[in-house]
Length: 585
Image 1 (cartoon, rainbow, N blue to C red):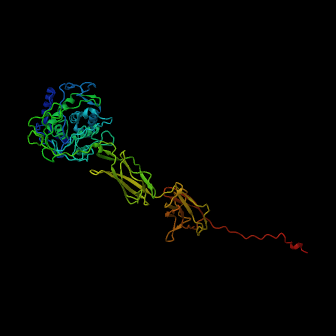
Image 2: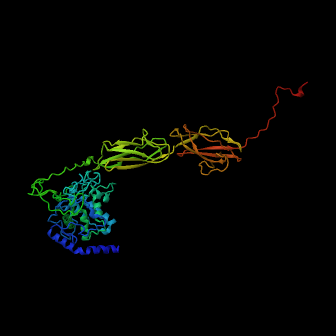
């Protein structure tokens, strides 16, 4: 840690004095800050500013170098330098920050301070970037959860005055399946959001349109490469990694200094909207999608009130002629309402059924468009995979269902196969970037919730003999015959079957040897089971046979082993009609 701090101190030592002087000058003049790291002024090259290239940050910027707002802070500061920033909730709307937006910046500062304290991220830097990128989410036009409404999109990065960045998200975030666009209050391009996106509001989604998610993502992005944002050089590098323009850096720096001198909270939706966007410049080379973008001062545009085209002014890519240069038609992006965004579980519960039975639960998914609303008419393909023999109704392993008006698609009912085990159901939707959901399912062995003898005849055998009467039982499940149910028969000493018995009645295995447990028994189509012959050894007494089914049903049957009782012949009784010999004449 000590070595790390020494490295950072060396890194900032050469620039601290320059930075302090420039900030002081800004405070006095109210001009845009020019506090750049040594060697970076006017270059627009992050390498010249000491940018760390080990991480590949020079390959692109968080925003794709999208346009930004060049409005500068007002000449009247919200407070004097060095005084308290705990200002009342009143004053210039320009100095104020919408409540939800300000809360998001401060929450991000606290979170990063916990996970990366050495970065020393100030929330005022997030506020400065948020002001320049989106005018604090268009003056705080966010819903109760902090999500921009409507969402904030930059222009298509199609190389026409901007970087050329072809689509990386299938239009999921920006609604454009041809080129990327910067998205949300902090203006992340989709490919950067895919790496840095955060879920800061705990709703289970990483949404670049949500100010809490976007602010935390921006904070973590600015802190990358072991930056210490309390050092001027590191702060410059962080801002340039966001948008590689020294004019952008100066504009962000001016707002950063402004907010450091004081601000206050204003109601959501009441913030001042910025009015001056940066002017796009031709991309340096086709297909690069990144690189320095020194931005010239804004010029009047014919499509703005009072704007006039400058004589002889050429458009990006033109040859200096006053006549417009024909451009190839730009593909019209798919509107967000029709762009497939995500595939989610629509409330499918646990998938579990007994062999041969129908599943009570059905697999259901929800398709959303790029702005999170339900999307209808999306084909969803459901596929069963596994060795249980489970199929959809109609005997199919794969079915395709289109989502309805509510965005949901529900697969047909599943019928469990005869083999117990695990299997999966996979739902796939989308063609450019397919979304996939996988559901785990289980087939359990056939079960019985009751088992009983079919008669109540006493079962008795003499020592060394077999029981003359066979034992027959019937298993049921929900009062219906339970066919194919596995049954275990065990000779036990107690009715709960805790202790097995090693003497008394027994079965015979295939070799004719005594066994007192059978595990290969199964009920027939009528749910009945006739047990194999039972034999008695030489030990007399009353013994217990316990039958247990898959599903937990059980019955205990008494078996008695005793010798037959001996009987003595009786003298015949005298005939009452016969005259005794003594009375005969």
